[in-house]
Image (tube, rainbow, N blue to C red; front, side, top):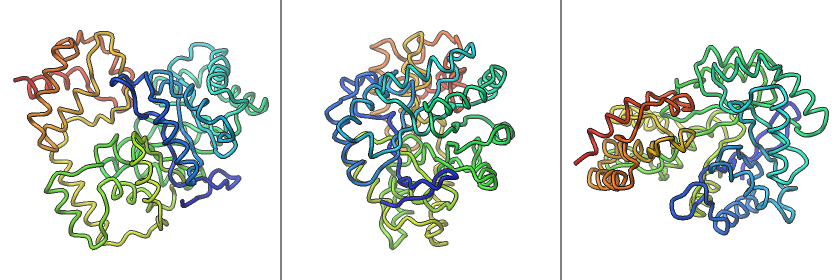
Length: 377
């Protein structure tokens, strides 16, 4: 495992961080974590050097923090840095800050959180918590020993990102970045901006919600040009690892095999080690994918449960797969299954609740209509 320095205290954190939002589940229900398999995965990762564990209030429909707390018993808590996030969209009063933090500490059965993030900041949530004196709360929480380091995760445009960065002496921040999202939200320019401020950086969605973990034949043909053979997921991770500004790269792993592969991917992953030819191959893949993608959904599940029970992330996944990977038959069969369950796009009442919560700011209502046209038999 490779380690990089983190925060102004130069903590040694694993380059690979374990994102706890995509554990294996039971009966396809994201709220029902398969605890036996997930514990095996988490313990294997920690035993093999991963020491950055990242969860959040809303992951697995509220159950990720509870599971992580149980999984870190028997000495595992002492081996890792624990990160979780304040659900800022639930904050209505100043008192809510500490109430939610205390709830999280209780759910995870810990007395402090190492790395605490203001979760999914965008214009509306930032203005609200700024008005409610978020910085006073941060200082109080640190003074009480409930959190050690403070950061934020970001889902808006670059100008707001820079404003938030400049608003407080943050220890770290977390942004979405992968070779398909170079100019998206904070992007590479945001990465460079916080580096100038000596703020440590965590990367989320390095494989774009798993979208870059497999490759159709023409994409695979590009990867095959390299004498260094890697899986598509490893290429995506290597592209992120190459940035000297990056300290931790989060991966939401769903199988033990993914854990093993991602740990292996950190071997010799020192900054600026990819060759010019390797970067050129990645650029070719990026261009080809850009020609095909219909919806920039990362399956983060912020939009569910939908009030009308629409299976939004699953529909978009099959809609994209239809065009990117050529899975016409499978995608259309799955959409027929959603129809039988009353979870297809036609059930949308256009209430807009999903669009208010989407970190990617997708026009979900319109995109669901497009998906229905493409996937209906």
